[in-house]
Length: 406
Image 1 (tube, helix red, strand yellow):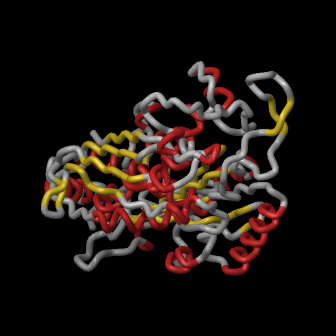
Image 2: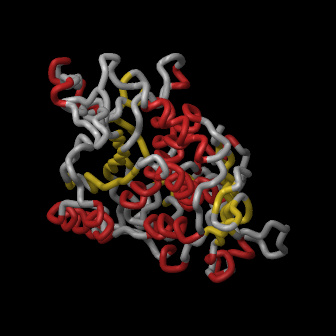
């Protein structure tokens, strides 16, 4: 069973992640984790925090001589801002976020932000200071998720599974979406300041971000995560909670500010007839063969409107997951709100913030898809060492083609 936990606050000493369940024998280095962490920090519209942090995950356990041992992998990511930055009231974050009681009072946050976890959080946890809530609900926590996702990326690479993401909408500026089978220039995505392969849309997106910044506002958008190379049959139709679609919706929907998740053509299918939606299976004369004459991929489709999922299981077509990201709740021109100390009308709390983190959300979305697919692969194929998992995977692939011979 694959599982992970994260801990830490946005302006605390650091973040911690523990991943349990990866088999032994996978090549892992801190450098490959750093690659994804650096991608998370990039993106047009990010705030000043990214100029302070240079995220680096230090492996504390579970890896020896560059390979996993099968034991839990613990990661530690330092928050440099904790020891080097100035917090509220001009006091350092070591004072504001001290784990010990402090003599000098810390000004509590009473001005709640509409759209943030502040209001339900202080109610649920009986907090007098909204900082008790916002420090953990901050998107800073996603750094730990991306680090765990990098570990799962290394595992999935052993099976030829790749996961990428790009941005298809920021502030209403639309770029083209895909069914996952058309080629996307992923190098161009990584070079784009908004992680969009369309240079025209990319420029318009940056302009939309600039306009929102000028107005002291924020903008949301849409991310698309595409996974290729999965075998047919990951997940299960047997129970609601074993469906891979259920797990992916929960995983991607857990991202800060995500308000909707769809697969393939998703919500647009509500306006179409079934004959225009369902993915027809190709006859065998149209199937591709591998070098040894066997079927390269069984049961290929003429379209991929389902986004690679039917009945909660992978079809073998590319997995296409799209998520709608709302605008960030912390605004430079704050919305009206209520002061919890007085009950009077006031302006919402403002602390430095991004104008948008949609490009970053794509990288975090990748991480959650990577983790979910790694869990599904291990659930299906098991193995205490990655070589055992590979043998089980190869044996399964030999059985999933048609029964009438290759």
